[in-house]
Amino acid sequence: MKEFDRIPVTKVQRASKFITTGAKIGGNYLKHYGKKLVNPDKNRDELNEDNATDIYNSLSELKGGALKVAQMLSMDKNMLPTAYQNKFAMAQYSAPPLSFPLVVKTFQSSFGKGPLDLFDTFSPQAINAASMGQVHKATLGNKTLAVKIQYPGVGASVKSDLAMVKPIALSMFKLNPVEYDEFIQEVEQRMMEETDYALELKRSMELSGKCSAIPNLVFPQYYPEFSSAKILTMDWIEGQPLGERLKNALPTGEGTKLGQALWDFYHFQMHQLKAVHADPHPGNFIITPDYRLGIIDFGCVKVIPPAFYKTYFNLLDQDFLSNTKKKDKTFAELRFIYEDDSAKEKAFFNELFTHLVELLGRPFQKDEFDFSDKAYFEELYQFGEQLTNMKELRNSKKARGVRDAVYINRTYFGLYTILHDLGAKVKIR
Image (cartoon, rainbow, N blue to C red):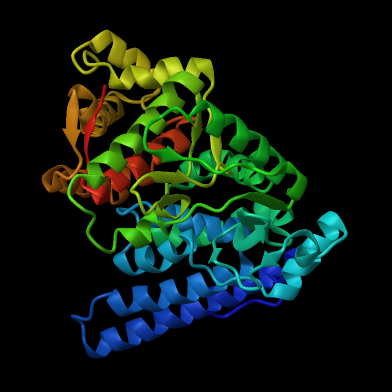
């Protein structure tokens, strides 16, 4: 795997990389339309593959907020063509890592010592590398440890990266500019928190402690004495990343066991802790050899404001869709519908969000739900594809929804997807 000896850190260096990427994308389009003149029936598959490769390669070198956006987009199976999904999914745990000298430099800055001065052994090559940092394996006495190291310049570049990735997001992925501007502030805040390893250490210890009684979950112990603003040290959990393990079939019943553990984990956080692990991608979970679920990353946590909690979870009440008064009030509070919308807009968005709530809330209407149901997920993905191509949404001058919902929606979508991949039949209540 290619390693990077440096990451572009200054705004000028990073802006130059974005400009170069933009030029490559422009060249890909010219090549595509040139071929289309010769063959009018040519589809966009080759164009998508070329663009996905060029964008991913550039973002991999930049790391940080830009690559994190790619990771987030890869989780939405409706927003992106397959070529983008497959390439951007690599950002979850297979991004090109930093070279060892840069790792040593980070340790020197944090502790005044290199990793081999602190640990008995330390793997010179990263075991996993993602958008914000990479993980190395270390030993100390009889302990095997995972040491997460943040990429240089990540925190300082989040805001400018998100500004520079905006044109790509708007033009290539057909995002609504009003909604992008509204919700990117929430994304920026969560990403800034992800660069604060002191905050992640605190949250990791608190949340894992409170969730430790949930069956079939495994949490690492954390080590403050070997952690800093840029380094986080925890126990190594043996097993495979969930996404890698699911490339091969699980033994009968194990998918449901793991899925129930995952559901209980999220249900407990949402409703008891009001703070939730908001990054449910397959690289953040380990399937252990005895088929328990290891939770290894609390970098992205959404704290749920009390007023928003009360309003949002009205959507999942069993009488919600039949209670017109409650539905109208909740749709207004969540800004699905605005008071000054025209009658036509109100009718359109009422029908749209009623369908969306029914579809996403369907599992909550039952005591047990089978997430392996392909028909349900085909309906879900089909509707999602309709949403991305719906000009009424893309051209709306108002953001449809509130920013507090961004990571809660994302969490449920990621959770549903993983439960589907596990083939889990889950007790909802």
